[in-house]
Image (cartoon, rainbow, N blue to C red; front, side, top):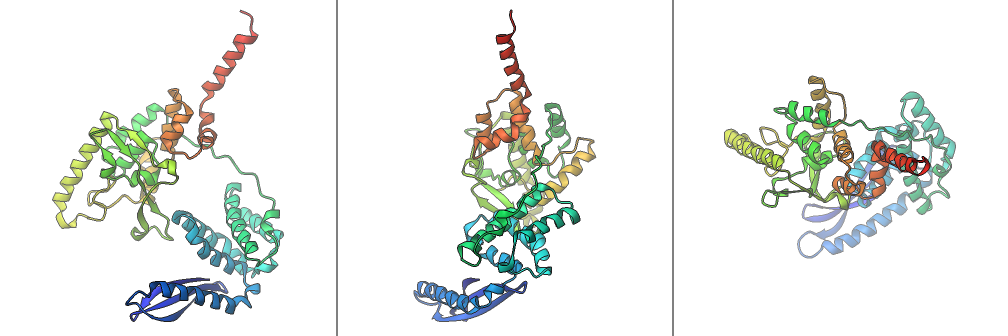
Length: 385
């Protein structure tokens, strides 16, 4: 159950929300305090009292709560302790994939056993052909939610801890060669997604980082480009109101800077001039919502993350280029740096990985030359000259 303060008729009210029989329930309770004056702190104290009171009222029925209802309630509890993008990811998985199965079977939280979860995974593999990696993602959500149930003393132990999981499949990323990258940068000219593709190719930036780049983040005097924020699009539907700019990055190390090569600086200056021309041409019809952003279309609207990911493979197909995902421009960038002998630690900093192990795990297989050099060392030791 959650409880949030809101204002109505010049008084503070509390909106209670919980799930029961797979349906969202809400109840409004007045605090009796006017919004005028210094009553916000008093209202917050009353909010906590109302929440405790109503949690007690429904506690008698809580032992019979369906697992699906509990998972939805846990989502709201976890919302304030996790990143917004993580919350939307959890919500999408739990509401669309996990809850329908257990709601249909009316599995109660206190009756849940490991075999229930195991059967769910087997059913998903059979009916939806999901991979072992997807099963692990389901399991992470279920295990975390049930861990909270144990902490709240709703169940004695975590049945998800006893489930046998399938082996994860290691994803092998595709990446472009230098020749393919040069061809891509040539054919992408004039396409609506030209700028994000150009920047991702040059700097290996993530999709949200590229789309979140603002003109104020580019210092043409010092020839430096900074990553200071990201665009997120993790709503239930891919709509403009779900697209938001968030200061910061995926990790603290994601806040980084790049030296600006002269040819990139020229490209960006031309891009900025073109935006000014469009703004003057279209006048009031030109969107003012994303004025400081680099990756916008002719009307000033930000290029949506979903549109970028969906359009990129179509552009590749249009020009007969090998199919890769937009994110694999990042891998291609790292591959080219490795091929030129750049140290893995520097590449970690370049890509904004929080841990060296992440960079090594993803890209170590791209350095067969490193293993060959080790073989050369041994040859020098073992083979008599």
